Length: 373
Length: 256
Image (cartoon, rainbow over all chains, first blue to last red; front, side, top):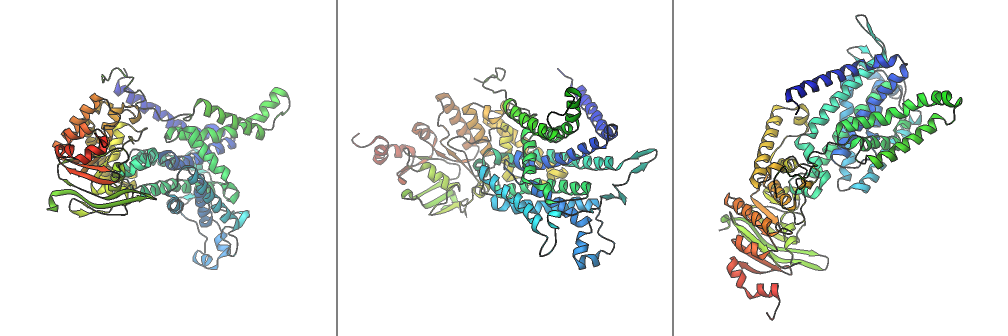
């Protein structure tokens, strides 16, 4: 028997070490080159996306194949608010902001969340009565519509600059300090990429807390009830329309924040980044990680994003070392291993890499200790 | 006169294409009664039940619950108005624990939303504590508190029935409507179910019981309605209904 006090201390100890490791990670990885830090930074973006989709798909059980649209909405919103694009194309905007729009980060994050939530409701409202395959088809269409809008909204008024995308996007600035410049704290110099890492880590932290709190709340239970049995949920007095819309809105808002951060990191957005394939990758992260289990979803996002990237950097040199030449190009190998991994996970871990702990799987029918005949 | 009735339903008609499932069906349930609705297979009991609880929209009919007219058009509104139901083929939330199932039942009587949960406000925490306390009490009330942390799908059949009743009670209903609660139960389970229903009734709840098992209904109910081919053929006290020739004919056929 584990002493409760000890196990709490142990938990705190593990938590402290994990936090320290996460905080030191960019400096450690920077030893091997900046591209490694970049992989981790982008992985954090996918963690945000996967956690947002987890609310819609994992908790509320609404299959959404167009989730990347909210990522796109957030990214384009940031791009428009933080680049000269609007000013070059609209006289009155240029007149209103003579020094250019440099929107503060807190405002951007909240606005991205709100705008994406609005689009979430727009998608949710007409699909309330749909389930399963039908819902998947409609959401897929929604995702494509948003992308096609972004490709074509360069005329009659040039809002998105079409397939060329929008560039010259400001890096985010916090208290007047731009994240594109290294930050000097005493003797420490924090490089630009590491600052992005900390910003994203903070946002991921907030999203995780929000996710946990929602899961163990009245709203979270209502989502799960709808997932399990919609008619029974209704009979319990749950207004399924409102509760589903809340799932779409909150899930989308995380996607929006993540999209805005993506735009700020890249400094450039174009419709190419928001294809159906991206929606499917994020869905795969949720499903393969472990639906509606937050640590599982995080693991799924990190593994599915990082694994191919790591391969990209290591497969070539490894083959050089073993065979003296590159037998299979890393790109091909990546897809091969990706596919193989999916098949293996489906076969051996159908509930995901790290599924929710099966509380109460021990059936009372098999359990002799409960003493019920 | 209508004051003493908790539920008063008149003139319900429901048609499915060419089938007239319900013709001018009505019933009046007094506060505190256990009211039985019986009838042979396919008589329209469950259809009537689904109309009362808002799952099917009736073609006509008037509905008064607790002195107020309600229109059973949305299922969740009916639950809010005060009718909680169970299902003929148990519909729990299988992957959630027994406790969570009952906690979902508290949804309609609580208010905390996304903001309360995200910022973990004092009001939200107090409400959560209240939900948890009441849910544990209800599990204890139906006698399955030791399975609180088990997934609903792992409970035995009889316990799943009790859990469904606990979940329905969690909505603080005026009327507890049970659709064939004894279906598929063995004799022992039926006996404990009967004790439980008696107790719920004694604690002041009004119960509408749809049942196949005539023995259970006769011993338990204060009043009974009998449906056949979507029409009411008898209404009254159990002992009177039992002797009614039309009821005997419906159950046993003519020439008996």
